[in-house]
Structures are given as structure tokens and as C-alpha cells.
Amino acid sequence: MAYPLIILGAGASFDFQDLLDYEGSNDIIKLLEWRPPLVNKMFDVARLGRIIGNYDDVKPLASTVNNLVKNKNINFDFEKHLSQIESKYPENSYKQIMALRFYLAELFSKISYYYFRHTNNHLHLINEVNNRGGNACVVNFNYDTLFEKNIKTIGNNDNIDAYISGNIKIIKIHGAHNWRYSPKAAIAKTGVYDFFISGGRSFYEEYKDHEVDPTTTKILDYSKENFDLNEYRKSREDKTLSINTWLYYLPAIAIPIGTKGNHVCPKKHINTLIEQLKMVDRILVIGWRVQDEYLLSLLKAHLQNGVKLTVVSSGNTSAKEYIEKFKAIIQIKILDMTFPNNGYTNFMINGGIERFLS
Image (cartoon, rainbow, N blue to C red; front, side, top):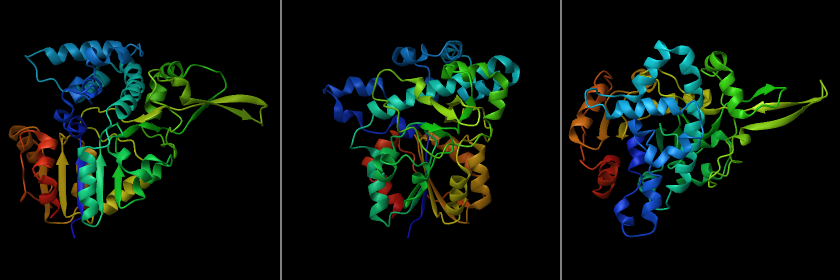
């Protein structure tokens, strides 16, 4: 029986559903407004300017990135850019990278609400997996929850271990918009954003290895236009000191800095992934640029021999480039390759998932 590993990158969320189904409807304007951006369009000011405006320390980063993306003389890479500013201008980058977590939490919480529809490519994929025994491991690099919202045991549960409790185990190596780190206590009542930005380098270093909170932020009503940062702060009575302390939560989102192995994921989930990799017999990559060295190292260490690889991308050139990156993993036998020119939707329409699983 097939035991697939399915890896979802930004391209899978971008192509979450076939927008041709909504042409001419009132829905299409809202869908286009909240379609998940690809990496180099993370600061699309035409659509996302209002959210960018909420975070002072994100504005200069967005301004720089947008101009670099337009420069035809360079092959701009957002992740490499973040890595460069971290090494060249560390003191200035700490605030920007800390602020970026809040920007991404707000952005992808709204995307998860406004872009989700009850018929979608992810649900088709999940249904085909369930038809063939229901077992799979999904590594989802996206901050949105478009995939998880199709699974009731996760969508109706605020326990983070719900992601790994079912037959389809979902590993969010880079975290999610509704994940948060375990809280940091403080006596003074300060705004959430100011609290973390003022922490500077100390917070930046501390949260590289901080534990993820066991409960997700179900309290956030992200359908509202006003994303309330105060929901990341709680008052707690300290009976020992007879005063109230405040608990501050930072969004648990890994910032993509180059090819470093930074990840945001409970240790229990990583251990589950390692155990799953030992059973995997085929890999399906959808819209992932194969840039996370941490996952690649786990594949190299724990996959069994003879694993088949299928890559779904937006074109032949990019798919071939991604496949090259897998060749260092000797357990992967590139016996089954597909290069659909129109990505995820085209793959699903033309029976790609059925062929992959059969």
C-alpha cells in the first residue's frame, strides 16, 4: 500500500483552487484580493498595503524588497536578501525580522479566512489519500491553514498535537499564522508589538530555540478587518508577588533566512516526521522550491531506498531545477517525474494524484 510524503510549498497555496470556476461571479474580486502571494510578492502593495502600514518596522523592508524585485539586472531572492541584511546590518535587521512575524501572522490569518472555499485541490488530494487507506505524511511549509481547514479534527481543535493525531499527519516546519510561542512574562503593561520590538537582539536570539505553545490561537477572530494584537497578551495574577503580570505571545513563524535550518515546530512533531519518513515509498512535491536544508537533511538521514519522486511545478524549467536538488539524496530514485505546465490545478484535473498514489 502506498505511503506518500507530500510536500507543500507556496505554489500549492497560490494554486489552491481553480479560479476559472469563479469567473464572472461576485466572489472573484475577493479571491484575487486574498490569493496567497508567492515569495517574491510578499509585499504586494496594491493588495497588501494596508497590512504593511500596520507595522512600522516592516515598511522599510517592504520598500526595499519591492524595488529589488523590479530590478531586471538581478535575480532577486527574498530569502537570500533576509539572510544578507541579517549578516550585514544585524542591529537594524532584528526589529525588521521580529516585526515580520506579526505582519505574516495577520496576512496569512486573513488569507486563510477570505481565500478558503469548501471545494479545493487540497480536499481532492485528501479524498484520494483516504480512498487508498488514508495514510500519508504532509510537510506543509505554508503559514496559512488552507490545507488543515479541510480536516475537521484539526480545524475544530486548539491542541497543536491534533496536527499529528490522525492518519494524515501534518508537519508545519515553519509554523502557522495561528501558532504562537510559549509566553514571556512581564510586569509592565506594554503593547504587544512594542514589547517585542523593544526587546531587540535579546528576543531575536532567544526565540530561535523557543518552545511552541501547545494551544493554537483559536481566540483570534481573523474574519474581522481589525487584526487585534492585544489577543497576543493575557493578564495573569501573580499570587506570590500580589501583582498582575502580563503574558506576551510571539507568533510562531519561522522567517525564511537563506537555506538555514531554522524551523518552528514542536519536537514531538519532528520526531513523528522522522518515524514517518522511514515508511515513505513515494514523494510528491507541489510548488516547493526545495530550499529548506533542514528537511533535506532529514530526508537524507531517514528515507529508505527506492523512493519515487514526483514534482509538480508551474513549468518544465523550474521542475527540472528542483529535481536536481534531490539528486544528492541517494535513496530517491527519480523514476516518476511530471512537469505540468499549469501547476497544481492542472495536475489534479488531469488525474495526476490518482497516478501518483496508484
